[in-house]
Image (cartoon, rainbow, N blue to C red; front, side):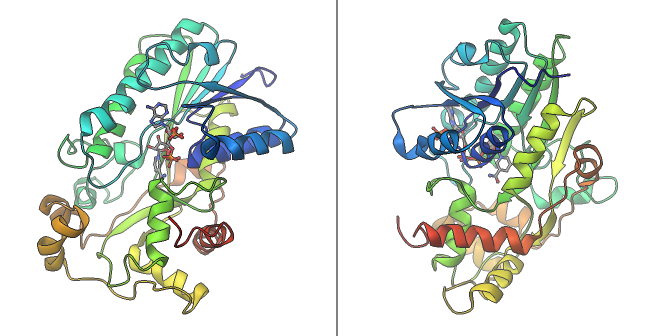
Length: 352
Ligand code: NDP
């Protein structure tokens, strides 16, 4: 049992998902230690400080970097629950996958968990992993025993060149289980969200989720989208799942979070129904062969990615998240519409 009075650490708390975790914890009156890379970066932390003044819990900000050994130690001291969300989330072309993705994800996780071991008081770690640690490409679903991704699945196909972000999440989660298995002081729960959408608490537009939603309405994808499917889940459900995983004594192991599978065109249709002719929302799917020709030039997509991800349906088994964490998935329309409304309210649809 976690002592509710002790501080709870949330790493990467200026991020899209973590900001909601911090908000819910503070609303519930918890004492939150929130790590950020730079306390002076107002754009990244203003919203956290505001939440801190408007909620009944106590917020303390700490500076910590995944690339610096021992960086999280001070913030961890005295915590029984550590929620580790910090990790670079970049899909598409990355200049140096090793430096920009793998090292901060894998070494950063080791860095946080070494700090957890040194602290001596931590009882549970909740790690934000991803379904990207469970599969590399949509085609992989055909190799699962029941044609559905579940908590038994591991991504064995990503590497530094092919889906390096997915590779970084796989290595980070594996490292976490490896370190966990060498001790008996704390248990490890992983949350493995599919693509996370829904309103952001900050006005940042540098995150992959926010960037995707903007591209559906700002005209960037107006000529058409690939016929590809993904799992999606509301950011507020993801935040609640982390807290339930942290505080529910019977939670164990990995947890897929996916409200449903959906194609990009279906997402666009829902947006079209709700925002009429206000935006240049994609209306059609572009044939696969066009992506073979133009994908590498326009969108940085490799032939391997195109061949293994366009034209396949995928499925996720979300039953464990419902049964064990009590997740009541938000309706997709609410997720998508409220995300666009938040961007509109902050005047971020077209603005850079
Ligand atoms: P964000 O980009 O908003 O958040 C990422 C966070 O990681 C930021 O707070 C960022 O800090 C921090 N971070 C990155 N590099 C470092 C570093 N070197 N040292 C310290 N902190 C660092 O993305 P999300 O909120 O979407 O992602 C949060 C987590 O959820 C990640 O682990 C991601 O892999 C995972 N995830 C996300 C999904 C999604 O669809 N959004 C789906 C599945 C998993 P800073 O604020 O300073 O930039």
